[in-house]
Length: 429
Image (cartoon, rainbow, N blue to C red; front, top):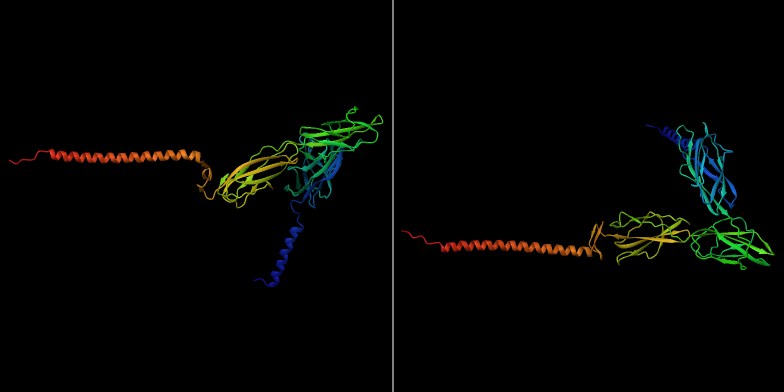
């Protein structure tokens, strides 16, 4: 039996070994990949550099794979530099696609690997091709492998970068819009109005609206007013350009861009688990859609009671898929799922949900409800009529057979009695 002193010493040894494991032995999933800079504003047509930074957090690593995703409609790779880098062996030099908005590279560092807090994996040069917001993020194929002889995956965290891409500073009149006040934001109003400053001695303005961010209006005066309105513009990104003539001299050009989206999100379906007719009081809804222009923003759900026993929410509330109802009362509901894009356009999809009080439920205004199906009264009544007629026919047939049988018995007995009466008596001689 251990003495108290022996027990105490062994307990201290166990605690020491546990602490040694947690604080001395390197942990898996320690490395961090990030982009530098992580934010910033850049002018249309300009270029800027982004560096991929590795922090191994005191763990030696020997292999780095990086996948980056960027919006190709706003950014283009101008130069995947092969300058300063911690990579010593390139398994895959940087491969990029300006059509897909993707960059992929794989590099290695010979054993004993590299242990670093601010290591530049690669520097990239992007060109701004359209205004708006651009997010550069790490893809699923990004990896960092430990120099442990087993290639243990140690990438714990990735941090994206978000940039604001803007038009060049105004060289002409300052432009703003009361209908579309924020450049880069999506609006569903296709009828924009633009207003700009007017200097003393102004002779007039030339303006144009098109899809060219670098467009320049001609030198013909189109209006002497400092405003312009447009009707029923098609969905997409539009650029308004204006310049002023004063003192018989044309000034510089100012630009203003508008994002217009009048189209709702794509059609979608609403799936219910375990089914649209169920005895479960906690059904689950699943739904998904996309939007081709401004992008899908969020979903809203509304429950509409179809009979007096149902529980009606009465309003839309924001939700995400999958969404689970809880403790729903038995009854019939119309579930409306509304998809709303970033311009405010919406599309509604609905599904009828039957919550049954049991596996088999007869009470229904529409017919007989089962878990998997409902038989409507319009279908059920003819079937019941046929069944009633069939049963009546069977009963009539059984009655006829029984009566016919009795008639045969009575006829047979009557014949026997008649034969007995008509039989001649026996005379003894």
